[in-house]
Image 1 (cartoon, rainbow, N blue to C red):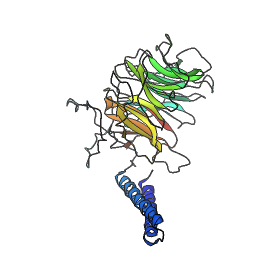
Image 2 (spheres, rainbow, N blue to C red; image 1 turned 90 degrees about the vertical axis):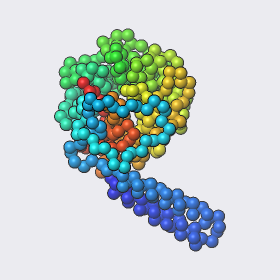
Image 3 (tube, rainbow, N blue to C red; image 1 turned 135 degrees about the vertical axis):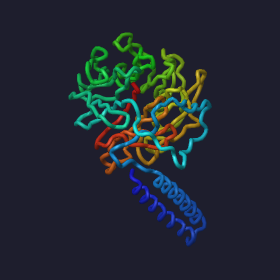
Image 4 (tube, rainbow, N blue to C red; image 1 turned 45 degrees about the horizontal axis):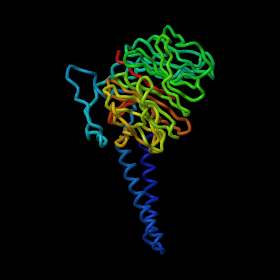
Length: 383
């Protein structure tokens, strides 16, 4: 969303607040005057909030974006916090200028060529390459730990049955991971050691989490529940998996051991909490939720090994809640977060999804893609 629209919204709320205050001042009924006064003050408070967000929001306009954080140097990086966060870390008044160019490579899916295909680009948005070109949609890529292979989902075999595929980093050697089965296989996520690929499928009627070897062997079911279980992601030590489940009548985050044992609920909110991604240092989980109305990104402490219940009491909102921000992914060893957003859409009825990168505290957002359409589900590799 452009700052101009935010200023307009703020002006409209100010006028409504003024009208409410006027009613409170000149009204005849005491109870009605009190209600109007409260409403007017609330509207003016929201006006100030929108105005401050508009003033601080500075979308990128030039087609030569820069990265959020500098490339690693010989200088040791600051230590990551070891305690669970209690309050959002405020962005500094004058943030340190970023060094041009997020290193590494980003894979994502995009409909820029007409339908959804897998693309890659440099970390600064340059050197765009289309890797797939099939009649069916190719979606949700993920890099192997060594950066040599990309796992993704594809509908090339049957439009209604999405299968898991692998390909080389340059798009070569595209092959189906397992024999075709009439079901959907989605959300592949490599284990940190590259020995497993976790995913979810509706082959059992409900959505369930599985894992399989990169050669298609040892297919193992990890969840067995009457409700849907999906969107898995590995802990950096490979011992646990965070995932989404509807077993408590709502989409919440859960964690389980890598063999599927000991599932524990991590979030407790009436909103939908989905698409969790465990930070490379093991300290945090970034996820997507509609807790503030629109889809936005949040940060919460990662569960310890002895977790027995929800740990989302200190959740941080990372993105602006007036626009949609989705599909987060960690980059640069946890020093940056990639995501997709419709914040620069010119027409709300025709959302334009672009890729962005920001610091882990939500500051210094930079736009990486500049094409109308849908650029989503980024994944980063430093190899």
